[in-house]
Amino acid sequence: MKILIISDTHRRDDNFLRLIGRVKPIDMLIHCGDCEGKELFYMEKAGCPMEIVAGNNDFFCGLPKEREFRIGNYRVWLTHGHNYYVSMGNTVLKEEAAAREADIVMFGHTHKPLIDIGREVTAINPGSLSYPRQEGRRREQ
Image (cartoon, rainbow, N blue to C red; front, side, top):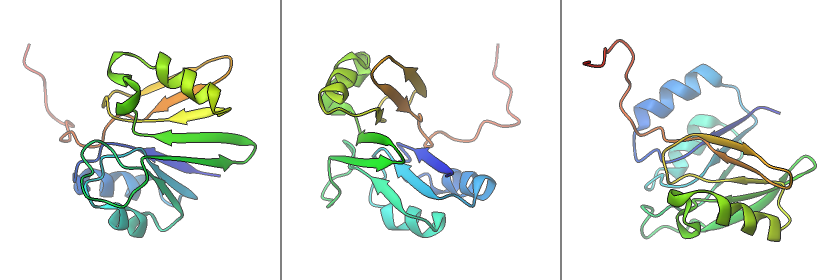
């Protein structure tokens, strides 16, 4: 099964379209929040089932704040993470995931990619797709 995990797209559709063009076909799209009303767009372009939650910038939407589902034998808990103090680390988040008996927790909010494989819980943050493309640019020293 090929799964694409994204987060914090903040309406940067161009970045998503470039990415999905490179990785398609996929079997599932997981969005960890802050899609800002574009959930149907992402589902249509991905052409597969999608799991998605509301982030702190998803105002007036009907998306759930959290989701629990299975991928094969793994219990997955999906949350944006802002309600679990992820800006200060993922300890609280992983403790809550363990209490929920989740094997994997996926979250966003910090815009920083992370894979933290623990004894009880694996935490995954895909980072953010909202930053402008940097290819071909040199950073001033």
